[in-house]
Image 1: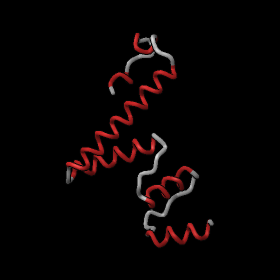
Image 2: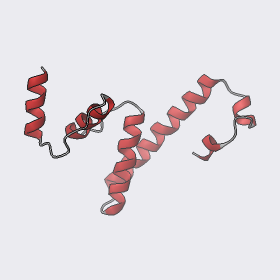
Image 3: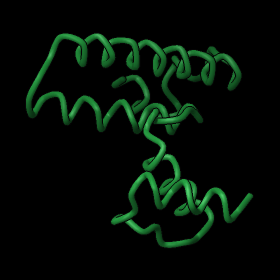
Image 4: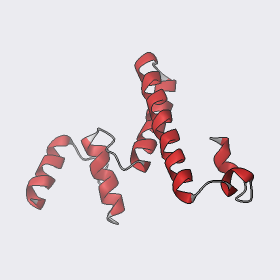
Length: 101
């Protein structure tokens, strides 16, 4: 991922179109996500927490769900400019969804 820290005048950026660079970055993100998922399958403990946090960040950057309904709801609340209730339970979430239709 160090290649994304190069200056814009670097030859790597001068020889490719913006579309090519974006596609390459997306490919790198999906590859990193696959690696993280493998690490989660193999790992445990504190390392798993860090890997899971990075995986959630990648999924969010890629516009995909974290797989956790409460996290996704809290993320949507933040994006809408609202402060989420972090004490919310799954039952609370179901009630909010019923009320919002």
